[in-house]
Length: 239
Image (cartoon, rainbow, N blue to C red; front, top):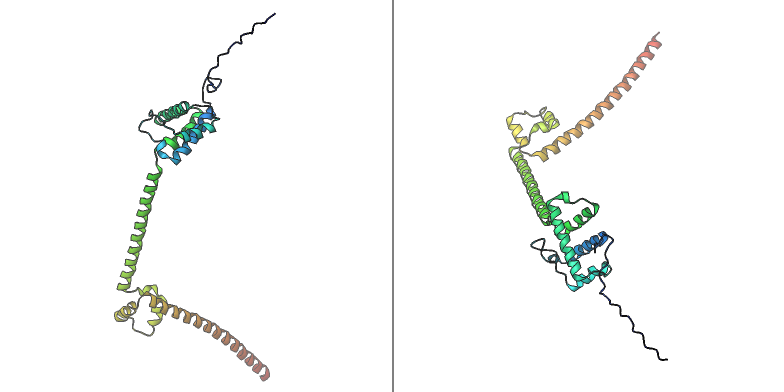
């Protein structure tokens, strides 16, 4: 008895599609965040890759960039899915940038912060430029202030020093010299540095004189006691 070969039932196969999350989404929340983080790194290496004239313009990715992104996402997405997702995230960011009330969930906040670093207005260069101008203005102000101070010092030198700033010198010289206008003008013409030196010398002499006066007082006291003792002894002997 011959047996007839059974025909194998052919099962139709369909191309593998990207897995979807329980809510029907192709990209999960973590996929979106990881996608933007990797795209941000690529944008930093090649700024032109993230620049566009309008939010809806097409996202272009070369094969190297696509492979890098897809491998980090588990190699489960197509080139079209990734570029379309980046474009949609960019559109979403620009809407949220115009109206912050659209940033509602923690996921929205996380995506917005990353997207802002990619597509937000580049303020860094302007801040650096403004700081540079501010520093330059501050340096100019400091130079101007220093120059003004030097001019004032030079003017004081030309006009002569004020003797009131050196009272010890003026007081001591007035004991020996007629401190009339001629002498005062002559002293002022010597300049502050010289007058300070002369004033300091008189101050040192004053200190030495104070020490001598103190020694004299001690000596007078000592000798007075000797005299008083001698007087006391003489009175006692006279009795």
